[in-house]
Length: 250
Image 1 (cartoon, rainbow, N blue to C red):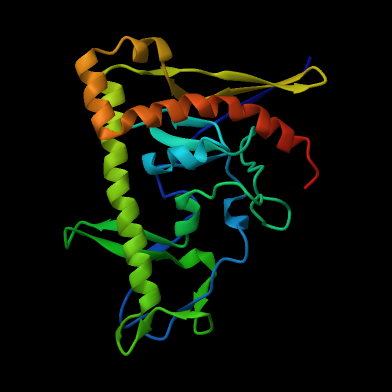
Image 2 (cartoon, rainbow, N blue to C red):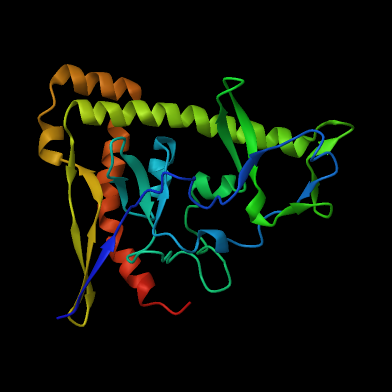
């Protein structure tokens, strides 16, 4: 019987995943810069876990196992592969599997909001390593010296995700406060006697969730968190879908 070791969710604290050289947009430097949309999702091919926001749980749970990347501040993630550096949702042409939910983290690229410690505010940044912007492109970043409508939409989208991220942080802190997250390495049967051992992720303990005090359950119901937890439980049935993709031709 063959056995392989894989980490279901890992974190790189040096740079956000996918981003190699993020920098702030500059009104002078980027005055004549244009952006082209990514030609596919090849940039997301080499990961097996995509960060999620709690607002995405209802849609994502239908397609992916939702787990929490282990760490001091666990991160909700959609598992998209069974081996390190392998996204089963992206084929050899860079196409995302049709009909499956596309996480906001992927849709945001190559933009991102990052902290500016000097100005003490968030600034819109773009990944200079993306190869998606220059003098030629579809969408100007500035028009008449001001941010273009395209850039304003990017700011709005990234700001919305930032706000949802703060709500996600509150949810995670509540799970930690009530000690609901537990280590849950998984062994996935690939068939033909082959198995993969997945590690490095947390799940919600159903027994501890069932034992929550009534006042906590009521508070979480008002916050809309109970549905998130049930979505997480439902997503645990999606591991087989990844196994099926592993055996599917690309």
